[in-house]
Image (cartoon, rainbow, N blue to C red; front, side, top):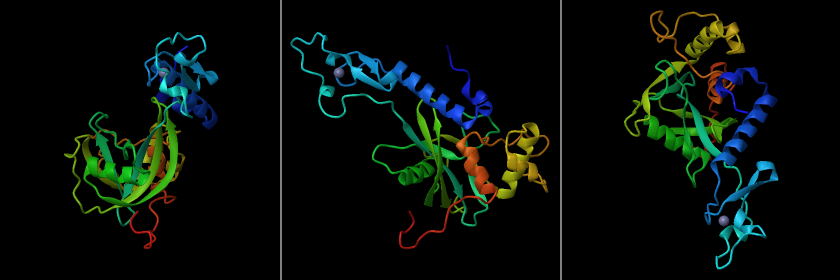
Length: 262
Ligand SMILES: [Zn+2]
């Protein structure tokens, strides 16, 4: 058996099927990548139907004469558990609430834009990860970080955690700090809705809200000769947090002054 190309299949899966797929792919991949004990280098064997790995030197029949017992033989951490790597993905809105920051990674197709994202680092809260990533990738200082929702992203073991944050749109964007972004831009809610409507015309399942949009003017990036301005679909959390903001259903909330700029 083999896994099909998941991003292409995603649109055909319902929520229940997608959850099974994400779980299965993560567990199979984790078992395939982890063959040896990280503590002593002995081989591992799979237990609990693949949900845990145990050092084979702990088996009663293991040959361990003259060897120190593996450190995993004691304490609660005597199993390896499947890893989950949290990634923060953030829709950065300006103070007016009407402009959102999009970036284009150097590895992405020329016309594809999305929210900025990055891995959580050890010892870091989600809020701090959002602030650090936005500064590193775009030179943007954000505050008012608010969680929205999350999505398993089993390629191989990410958990995408979606946030909104506020930033000053008058500050120039910088892409020279970690050189991940090719460029950044800001679009309005109206421009987002028109881009979503144009995607809806080419894919009826792209965005159910987009059917209701009357296009008043094409966004600056949508001239007839330019390649289409593409944003993530609603099957990806980046598309969800952008769409929820564009249709006025979510975004940064007013700050409680007693808590400061979290
Ligand atoms: Zn071991």
